[in-house]
Image 1 (cartoon, rainbow, N blue to C red):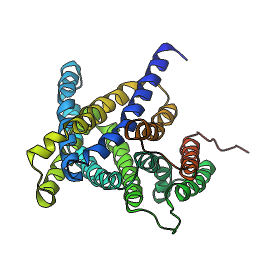
Image 2: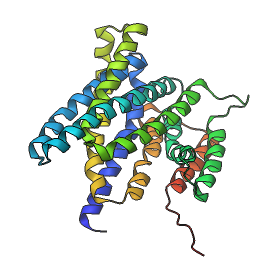
Image 3: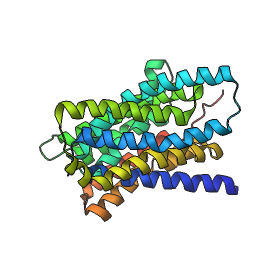
Length: 297
């Protein structure tokens, strides 16, 4: 492993750490403001953080005018589509985090890594054996992590599971848009789109006051600057010099970091049964990302 690859992997590890701790920020922020208000604030901040990076990229770019125009149109429309899906997914996540532990939310959200290959069925893609095994492991893990003695799933866990499905579609939309447009511009547009949609829902349902928003300044700034702006930029820079499979494996560590952050910062603990579910789900997440080649006859 050369120095560039090692440096990139360390940056990806830092990205996973930032995203893992962001679950704590989201949980704490809900003590002061509603989910739509929190998301509106952090998405607007995340979009503004990326504006200087976009200006710097345009200044150093040497693309042809025609290609730049076409790419810009795709970035705007693609970013709006990504933002709409991001709004739905993040709203579900915020409602879920308010009603479950940080560790559970981190692991259930990470299920998008298993769900995305399954969605490939509708695109007529063949599902490899490791993905099917991952589905079985993830199902067992979800049972141990979420199922109570009365065989009921908590409202928070259910919202976060729906959020994982939403983020799976978000990944597929980004997968289509990113090769056709500038990734940083797409992200900036999606943040502002999600922020506007969240602001509309805030005006309709929450009616926050400036005092409550000011009280939530720390978690909002962390989620906006660090989780949206900094972590995304680190991911874009780091993935240029490392294998995408390795990158996915490292980034999936956010689920583990969320458990550690919930324990260290909030004092939230998981039972032995719940920890067993985390282990099975983490195994499923890792196995789903292992490249499997078909044997030739």
